[in-house]
Picture 1 (tube, rainbow, N blue to C red):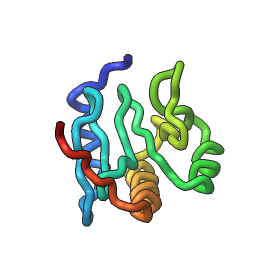
Picture 2 (picture 1 turned 180 degrees about the horizontal axis):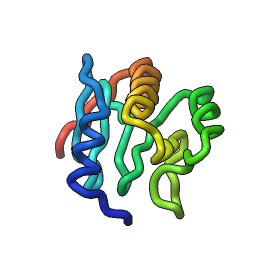
Picture 3 (picture 1 turned 120 degrees about the horizontal axis):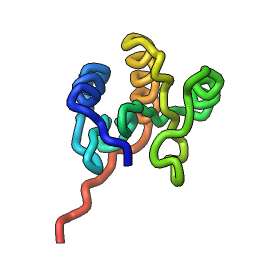
Length: 114
């Protein structure tokens, strides 16, 4: 499993804009961005990935340097890693697009603790 650095986590946090229902939470030893409880962006090693609409995923996949997000042997479906060559502005734009898409989903209901 690729390791992220403190700088990777700080950069990820700086790319996620505040908004209604937006949270950045720990996720499997890394961090993820959530809106209304649904994850829309994450950090895996130094790769920043987004869960976007099918049209946005098709557009992003056509950009050189984008690719599967998550473990190589089991990438996350519906997610793509953004090219490392993206500027912060480009990355923020794609993260915002993913947030807008995921915000249309029903809010996650927290499961009661046993």
